[in-house]
Length: 143
Length: 132
Image (cartoon, rainbow over all chains, first blue to last red; front, top):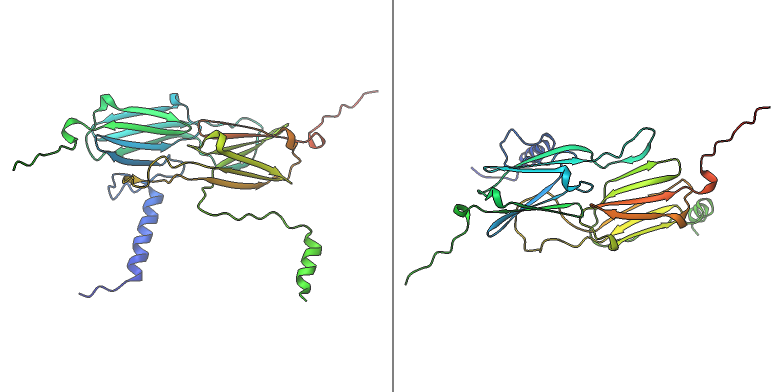
């Protein structure tokens, strides 16, 4: 079969991507359901012995964050404070408020006792040391 | 001669400030709340350095501009990436009369808070009616 560039296929995949973005992509089992409206966005990277996770949560204090690790599932709950009070007139209201929960499936096991979290200027950084079994190991080659 | 230009000049008056910007900027989410004495502006600018935020107010135009240094090197390989880090920029046209000399700002927890006190002339004044 010859493969042509098919604009319909492209449109289809664009639509899928768009819908997944809106609906949170729970149906196709993505490990990282897309961040919905107001959901704090995350970045995740590998730092040899640890997984690093960063989240932008401006306006949130450390006591308004709840982090838990169970197996491969990392749950971060944040409570974004609301400044609303009676009799205020809003000219713009774009900042998300309320409770948000992100559940992320980690790519490898981590040592849940050694997870460290730091909050600086609205940026939450998690250091998740990998479990012994998941650590990279250098294998010597005998000659 | 282009008469259209002359006409629009005469009618429109002085041109509004226009900006040229290079590079990429993020547009922060803001809340603007009107209170009796002031306009309160809150902007989400996580990861910014309070000293590196530039706030200007001129002829009713409020400009927020801040540098946000990348927290991770370019060679960082993400397992999963949902956002990018970079400078932010946003301008507002404030139609209320503001006492520019008394504008104050502070930064904490990734949120920039701007107090824009209303000018005396536009403050709501309650006028008591004297009963005879």
